[in-house]
Image (cartoon, rainbow over all chains, first blue to last red):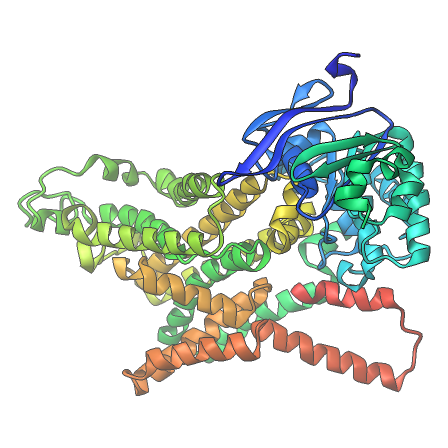
Amino acid sequence: MSSNSDYLLSIEDLTVSFDGFKAVDSLNLYVDRNELRVIIGPNGAGKTTVLDLICGKTKATGGSIKFKGREMLGLQEHKIVHAGIGRKFQTPSIYENLTVFENLEISYPSGQSVFGCLGFRRTPAVIERIESVAKTVFLQDLLQVEGAFLSHGQKQWLEIGMLLMQDPELLMLDEPVAGMSQPEREQTVELLKRICEKRGILVIEHDMDFVEKIAHRVTVLHLGKFLAEGSMEAIRNNPKVQEVYLGH
Amino acid sequence: MKKVYKHLLGGTEGTIGLAALLILLAIILPASMDIFRLNLVGKYISYSFVAVGLVMLWGNAGVLSLGQGIFFGLGGYCMAMFLKLEASDPISTKIQSTPGIPDFMDWNQITHLPAFWVPFRSFPFAMAAILVLPALLAYVLGNAMFKRRVGGVYFAVITQAVALIVSLGIDGNQGYTGGRNGITDLRTLLGWDIRTTSAQYILYYVAVALLIGCILIGRMVLSTRMGRVLLAMRDREDRLRFSGYNVANFKIFVFSLAAMMSSIGGAMFVLQVGFISPSLVGIVPSIEMVIFAAVGGKMSLLGAVYGTLVVNTAKSLFSESFPQLWLFLMGGLFIAVVMLFPDGLAGIYTTVRRWVIRASKTRRPKVSQPVVAAELVNVEGD
């Protein structure tokens, strides 16, 4: 057993209770560098809450979340972002009144203080980075289009692109293919495989075909608790998992 | 040079808009009005500083403050304190029991100039205070609220409560502030009589110049990355935190900037109108100022000026003819604008402009690209 600091992300004994209801209960979870981990589980299993806890949106009641050996609990959201954790939300959360270019530019990780913003310049390096990320997420021809005019799938890609701008070491994606057409899903599989080479990715997803294509390992949650972990194959054949989730 | 043109002036359209406003304020109005009416316009221009600040704060950053009168009043009182001290020299106040202090203090049996009045004998201090004090107050209020994530309606209500407290505080401390009557009987600025016709013309032009300056500062701020971040904050504050921004700091910044602009307006009000009183600080003026910005179009810096001029002109016309009905008309106007023209006068202008463009396009058919359409929507703001 290696020590915790070898993991990119190590969650230990994480608990959050809302008025006595434990949405996440003594959870342990370890994610390696360069690993693509998928969290699955029935509705109300606490999947999204786990991501909320990691990115600082929800405050934990107890436990620890260490990212590269550094405690993340109690940090403000923007500090967690600057530590290297990016988060995509369940419903695509982009800035609808800004263009694709501006959406990506907002996420460029330097000059994000008040005076940094006033003095920020669109240098060739910034523009080049935005164009390269736009290409990665298939939006290179739509840079001047406002976010509101994108299709649902394109919004999902844009949000992934916004995360890539931050160049996070841990990328958390909440239902990245929800509302996508089949060809879009396949493109997204390729996208995730490509961007996973340099970082750890944590995905929540219900689409089992999609999970099978991307997951290195799968963690199953049930009622806020850890239920099982392993390859997709092993998870499918796990009798406990079949009982609460996949068997139906 | 090209960059300045694009960022500061907003390209061809922004430059034309600004030039049109300048021609109206600096040439057409002075040429067509007597000094009494022009002085009224000067008063409205002082209010429009607040409206321009509200476009930054409310329209762009999505933070509605119902207490901008506080900052208007702060600037006004700083200026009035300086002018009052100058008007209260020992010779002109020799009939008082304590000569050399403002008359209202003497009436209230105060025999020493209070300590917080003393620095206002200095002109540089008074000028610095007009700029720094409101920004400082906004910084403190902003820190107290935005860091604790007090926002939206709660923020609006708290600013309104602060406006009430400040106006009551001024009202209740007659010996120190002049009380309900305010500070009146202001005469000279560094020996220059501000009540003469020529002084009123000069002060009017100073106010116009400062207003244009504030609009340019606003445009400059909005043309940087700050402008995009403020829009993003207005629409998706929660998301912006996860793009790596400390949202509270941005709100504090724009709140302080708007406060500073309001304060300059207050100072110009005192110079042109010759008095300041708590009735310009409290809830009612603070809300009226929001209406000016709403009528002008809460996203348009230029619109804010037109909104202020239109509402106030209507106010003085109606209140002369139907004094009892005025408040109802004002309320009706606000409701009508919000329901029919949510983007105010600037929105009407944009709509008309779009028709004109569409009409001219159908005459000369051209390949239209989605990119062009997106760019059009983009510049609607101003």
